[in-house]
Length: 212
Image (cartoon, rainbow, N blue to C red; front, side, top):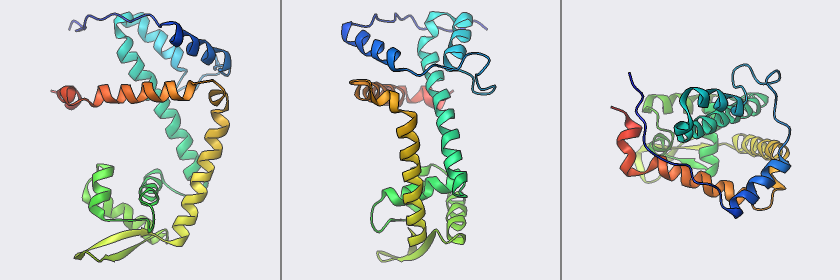
């Protein structure tokens, strides 16, 4: 089947953009060469180069998405390493993060967890049970709903969550030290990622996200 393409042109970076790109290049750690690359995740430049040979320049938007997805896989690996060091599973940590992010008293209704995690009610119940069985969270009566309950971090869960977040902060501060030294680099990337997310989340493109 013939590949469908959308006519587009990639604009040339202006002077300000080129300046930031050059600062990134100067500060960037040496990337892994082909022999050092992860056999599963690979090196994003290598993967993009191989795809571009097959698909051509018109695939640039798709390949940018591939690159970001690959970074997400690397971040998942870092996250899993931190979780394992505390004896947690990834989904347990995500639930504890949601409770911690809610602020004191670090409690949410199951319906709120369901909305933010995008899983079934049965899955939410199972994950809550996993935390309560470990003494990391507890069920409390909901003062606004006699039939409902709140799930709240216990003192032990809050202490563990603070340790987990501290480990994340130290890990990323170390890993991204070269990035932090690029003048304007953080703001430029954050703005670009926000713009990228807005494009793929746009209501006008809803049919493209949901598929045929």
